[in-house]
Image (cartoon, rainbow, N blue to C red; front, side, top):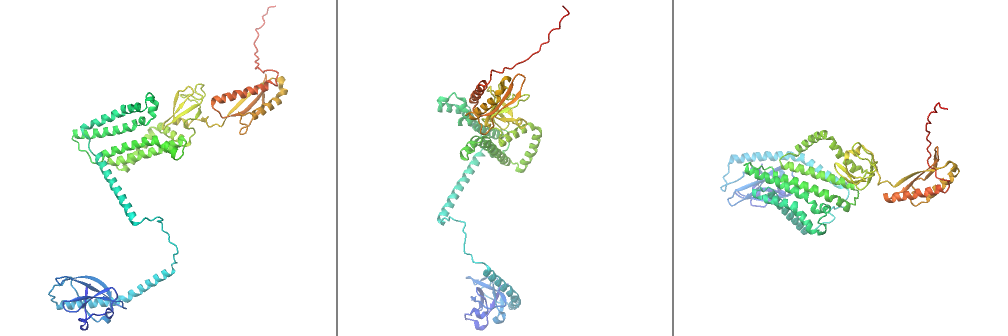
Length: 541
């Protein structure tokens, strides 16, 4: 309630001290000095037990007053003044209503009395709060060290300039984005077909002509052109041409058939799909080389796995964003993808088996590109046991299939699911090649067996071609056949290229046969005894 305080006659025309009024500091009290004049006095601190709401007056030229309430604590017994209500505005004439003033004084007195009763109840709580705050302050340990996470703090002027530069860049980026979006939503016209024709010519013939001009010495080298950047551009340029073709057909036929073009972002969605395709092509081409040069990842299989995961992520994000631009919620796209994936998986389990086989090959890496493997043959597959095949050379490991090169240089395509159920021997990762030789000795030379075995073992252990440190050297009499005694030699030759390995094997076998010939009386040729049935003797004499 807004209250006015009428001072006794002794205060008229004088400056009343705030302490005489029993008012706390920073409060405002309106003291009536005359019938139409009011002034403010700052109340000072005192031990008040009651409270009231005084009014702060603002005087304008028309002698009208607008009041704002402030709370002050006053002892009604010490103040001994009457109170009267102030209205929101008072006219310049100042005609008082006796009945209204009496009612206002009564209400003011009642308010002051209630405030005096409520003050003792509020004082203990305030004292207890002050005491608790003092105790908490005393109990808190003194903080000796402070930590500022901003180790480097720029001056305010530099910070302002930096923020302004960032705001400028942000504004430019937003303006550029708006411009690109407006350009993408710009509808195609019928005469824009020239752009499709020029782009198609640049893709089909322009790339090749530019290659021939830049590489005159390799003009006829098709393989070099396919591996070059201009050769790789065929895929991205084809994706852009297809994107423009779809937008051209969409916009032109919408005009011809008078179909209103929707505002669901069809153009932006198509551009997002095209951008995703370009990103996938770029990632597939340059990410393996980046992993090799930047992170020193030399294994082809590991680079293949990382590249595949990156392309899958880019494809999923592109499809989801394009679907949202087409007006499809992301949850609906994921739901349809889940149901469609389950149906497709049940209908094409062999295809998924090949894809899973390719993924497992990339993760487990039983063989990599450039290695030689030995594979057992199947009903419709040539195995390594075929003399024209020998060990397969791995040329490429794809998503769905693996390309192998046989000994007869015929490329062989094998579905990746085939490797999930067959044994594969990695010949390249072998550290040595085993050599097992059977030497025949005549029975009449059996007393030379120990000498022959010792010299053969000594020769093998001292040979530079034999790995006798990591693998055993075994020379023993293993069997006694009908026509000879058999000495078996088991050893390992160091891993060498195939042509050098065959020469090393030949030299080792020749040296061992020389040792055997030096201690035997002759060559133990195989002897085959064949009994023929004699014709029955006739009864002739």
